[in-house]
Image (cartoon, rainbow over all chains, first blue to last red; front, side):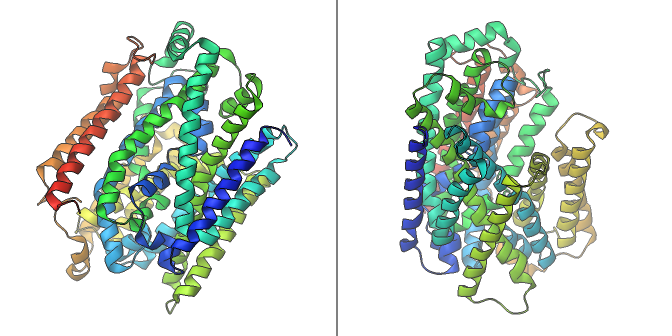
Length: 488
Length: 72
């Protein structure tokens, strides 16, 4: 038992407690388990959706990018700030539809709007294919952090099992409210720890943030000038930087574990106010990037760059209590995202993957049970990939980012283009994903060095429009729920 | 696109301008290290400023939306 582990264990204990308690406050039904009985207020939504910003990627990848790629890391601030804005309009619409028609997921809405179970099942399968690697990375992050915090005495699989055993317990027991209560605690823990270290580390090594940036500017001015560097250290190009932001902005609110939270919201006001407050989340990211910049001159040559924060915690001569606190913050980052993904993947899998294929509807109790079973199975699969398999998930995850953005045109068409048809949306999605995959695997074929998701989106929109115009429109009867005036 | 209030079009316009300032070519205007502000290089300050602009635009739109709907 190391001193660093003590804050981690205290943190895990609080997470377990906060995760188990709220089960008392939700009904024992699908509505309660999946959407917290549609009761989430602004604060809970803010932190639940904040998981997209504060994930393992942010706490390990963010400083890693700042450390190895300099100003390229600024793109993380941009995409989160802009990516949530479509939700100001889409979120309230989705919420009202969900309430009226009894929906809880993104694929349910898309499937109903286009009158196509095939489209619903496709979106669901695609969602799960994107979510499982995402979850796997979160589990890997936790195993790694606990191994470092215990000075290697806790093997990665044991640490991952401990942390994700706790997450699985409260997600299965409390559902949406468990995810949201813990997210407030985890979000606050991360913000506090991010600020603490973002201010303390530059002060300790350079005497302040200003002197630190001056020193970097003198040694590596190109690091502080966007678009920053590539991962091989050569300058990045504007094409790549700009298009990475655009794809991430469009893909942001299409993530299934995100979009479905509109159906958990209490009212339109709480969704809108959450979107208004969301850019503040990015301001909390600035100190996290500063942590990475601190290491540029002090600890050159750390590889892989993602390990820069844990490396500094071990080698920067910090008190083990302080280091333990930062390790706990990193655990929170991973679990904050991981629990939401597990919960969403199980829900989407059952409601959109299994229920539409059954000949008769499930009763409420069985459906809830099935969702829990699927959550357990998917988490077990992700755990296996994280600790036992050697498949490289990074490529899969990169592919899924560009891939998830391909849902965006269908989502916009769902609400704002009545002429769009199932054939159009399906063909557009297929074309977008195919083009995205092609350029991901064969980057040499790209005409310009833009993110492959952009090419996918262009193909997607063209195919969606052309095929929709060539096929029979969806009946006006079905569209009446989608044809409200205005944007919101 | 009938029935879209003017404030929503204004919000979209502001967001697109702020987004354009965060990528090429708009970011070229802010792409330098000096002057520093609060110890941060100018390019980072520029980006945070674009986020603040978006935040203010959202806040004003939200207030107007709530006034129109009586806080619903």
